[in-house]
Length: 74
Image 1 (cartoon, rainbow, N blue to C red):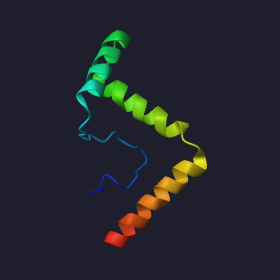
Image 2: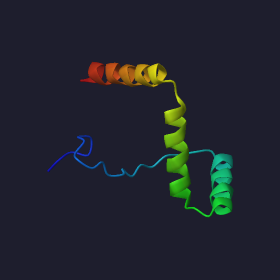
Image 3: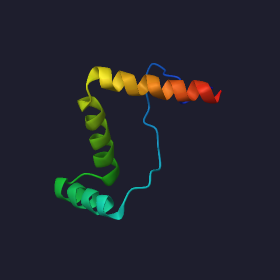
Image 4: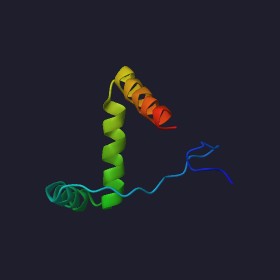
């Protein structure tokens, strides 16, 4: 069986749980209702577009910093 972190031919969505401030939650609910989409779909869209908006080298730097922390733990 393949681990979820190992990419295969098709990447499947991954379910995560996060804690956000109540005001952010209310804003997401209102926006999702206004747009006629689910809260989950809107949150995923906003996360994805904000990550894509990062400069390529900024995104690459944050990934390498995360790997450094991961490698130090192991």
